[in-house]
Image 1 (tube, each protein chain N blue to C red):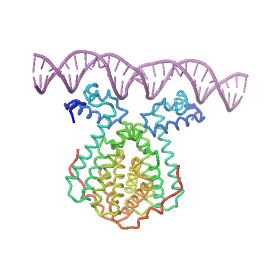
Image 2: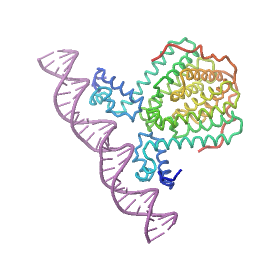
Image 3: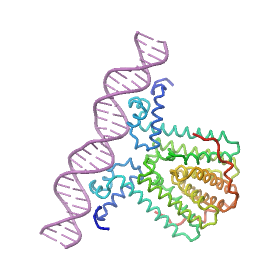
Length: 212
Length: 212
DNA sequence: GCTGGACGCTACCGATCGGTATCGTTGAGC
DNA sequence: GCTCAACGATACCGATCGGTAGCGTCCAGC
């Protein structure tokens, strides 16, 4: 495609803005951070900022895209450093996540936090979140599928719920607890999935009266 | 204590405000909703609103307290309607939660969503959320303790993570899937916890290199 | 050494933010 | 029928919101 220069050439300015915005957005939430504050802490003029990002929403989207990118980069790094055994790989991933959610200053998953601030399901933040979480389930499924379990899709979703729960744990868990609880939980979910039991286990606990 | 009338007598005005604010806060997030909008949709004058709630933060706190109260009311209703068997009770609770998170317009757990908008851990919203989530773990623990499992505390936390994960599932799960996945997941976690295995299962998957 | 794009600075825009002051109305209990 | 607390209506406050206009500076590439 032709070089229309819709965006200035790369001179590091956009990176400075995005770095400051990402930190501020993550710590304080989106709507709590004004553009003036991003201008002040990035050291970039407001006019320059708006040459790189048309609107605040565009900056928010760039923030979440960046978080998404970095998250999978680290994920891939953990997987690459692990042996090929899929179960060990899963445990290493949970080790990484357990440490992540229990480290100081952790404020939860940015995808979840930011999406909560926007009501419109078609807002860029909501779209990016959906894609991010779908990718998580897919990656988990491809790992679980390599382990002998009877319902890999279901177990993958359960693992994703466990992980998202850890993301929202708000500093309740120590590092050791977080890792152990995640790994033992995954172990239990994998073990059960590999057993051949009648599939209607849950049915007898099914419908009570409707609530609300 | 003496009747100083720090707050007007109960004539239903505060309820109208809280009802409108709760709906708007839940759907749009806190900072996206101005006090003027609450005034308009509650049909209560701004002056009257501020006679009942000193600040917006006070209204936010009242919203979360109300959500907390109603949540446990429904929880207790589900438990009361279930047979005494603790496992069946747990399954009924998960049936209720699975339906809740998959119903149309569900926007996630208000405690989680609202707390994400405030950076200060001592903000009322953050405090109420911590109390709410701690209560969840305690209630789960008291149920799990009645079932023969080797680490009831750990399983209770795992169930809480599973539930919080479902709360953030953002409409990904159909009603049938949500209920089945939660109940089967809980079943697996309970089964494993009741087995006597060597406690160091996870240790061999422990520390990789540090990331970040 | 001139040119053009990237950037900084200041000043500004209308809208909205949370919150308040003033005053008039209404209605139940004595 | 008087009182007093509760509520409504309007108008306003300073601060901040996201975003823009205008203009000067700086510097790499021709």
